[in-house]
Length: 611
Image (tube, rainbow, N blue to C red; front, side, top):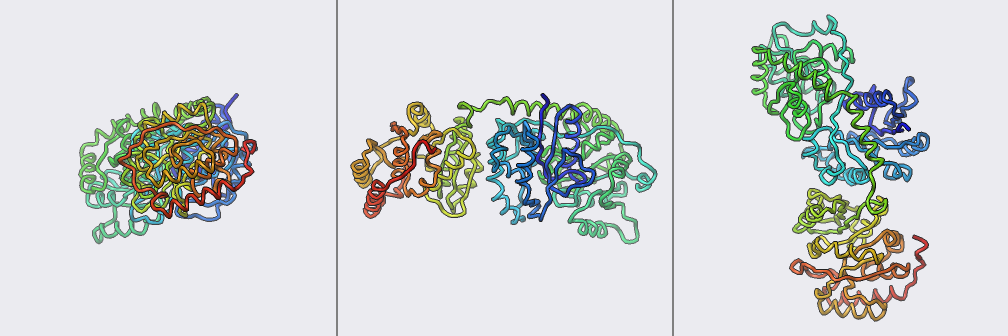
């Protein structure tokens, strides 16, 4: 049976952009290869839209992100109508987050197409603020995905958001339809000046494209000319720069062409000598326009931008050369050398055309992506169909130890680490994120148990089969996790015990607790615990939210529900043990004892049947 696919994209042609063009070419080729492909995107429906394309009207745009209030309902309806075998989610795109909220979506394998990271410069405070809200959902989508498609090896290597998910990632370069368009008409040819190297640049007039470097390089040379195709917010500033750098009384040999038709764009590509792409940030993740130029047999000169796929495309295909970003003098000298010695241009053009036909064709790309769909469908989930173990770490001002704890977990193979940054002031959350953890920073402070319950609810929502809670201060060695897991087959909850750490005040509180509650446990305040799926279901309920202390209320809820609790001895790095947050004074001990007494007198109606 042929695969049925639902793409969730940002926009679709006639909207312009590399993601949009690629999605259109990909779906067209998928139809040719017998796949039943559909798409859900933002925008108003057009009269000639095919039945497989659904657009959702946008009410507004917030910091470059389209806001469509009907997208969740449209996604739910599309899944119900189409019954897709795979969801193909194109990111960055805030609309894909709705899939996290739909049970029908979560029952389908997800393939994420990672077109680029969301990159935020220090000057873009609004975008930086927005990405702080965006990132937890982004990481949740990556967690849910079975496969992640990345567009080039350098981009995968440099991507911080993908760091924790490398085992799911595969590189499939972008591609396009490789048919060579007809020769340009006289109108396109007449726009070029004689006896100059004809340099073409295409892209949105925005900061990261760094058209300023190209303009400064070309305006300083009598041997070069430049035409820039595209629109954007920097049009006025770039036009002013051209005017400033053009000697009075002479004709400018740099032109801003604005938006042009596809026919005019391909006419310019066919008539230029080379395409230049001087982008200065990794927002330029791939540079699909390079493939368009190579399909016309045109060489490319691009920025040697670390972490971008752009220089990789050019060097791996031997279709041009790379130059350091942001250096107009170097660009001018390199382009003038190509005017004086044009032989490399023809060779680069031939090699680029061969590479497009052999390595960057949409036919080959579609086949590789179809293999990812099959992999996602057949990829067995560990632990009998559930997702792997989730490590939950509530943290507040733990910058000194946070990074080491997360790195040690990942090195031992525990890749699913969820850190709750409970309003730290020392950068704990950023350190955890950089080390590879998924980080949540709640709007209001939660406390230790509130943070743990947030992690437990996250595990329930994301299908994790079990949770281990642990501290961020390095007390519990990562090497002790197998001790908890070894006992997990005989119990629903496993508590890691290290009674030797207890102070006199703590021992007094424990004796009181054991006497009134009837537990035969030695370490009653250990946060180092294993919870299976049944226990997760209990602890995610509203009753558990009322508990002030994990060690008191949680244990009683679990016992009331009929779950099996065992305690196992573990070692502890006592050098990391600091002042107790609960047993730090006789008043706190008294408060603890009063609380436990009240909890033991209380009654809950939670039963195992309600899980």
